[in-house]
Length: 144
Image (cartoon, rainbow, N blue to C red):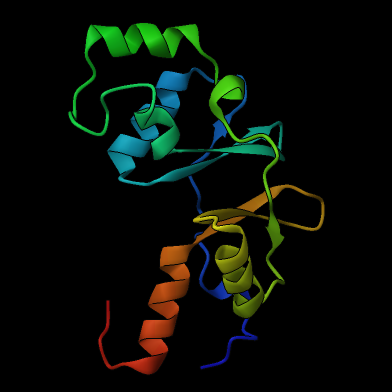
């Protein structure tokens, strides 16, 4: 296993994301429809935050029910993505190594990191699941 391998080899490049000006309901719909847990938030093409399924579940009954009831819609209309997202987002570059990212996950207890290109634009996302799958693939014959 080569932990100096670049995360560009394990990250999701075609990442779902929202704009800071999008409605909060769009974030909820993307997370539920695509069964993902994290969405980078952009302003233009620059990464300005991240929003998670946990952030949304705190506002709704999303952790209990798969539908959206009228009360949830009211809450989602009252708040904006900018109010709910984590705005001091940590990013990594696509040149970062798997080891560097794993150390950030372990030290800072993040579960996902947006990946920025040299200009700070969104290039992808890397998650703890990506790192775990990489390690398992390199240490076992179990294939996902």
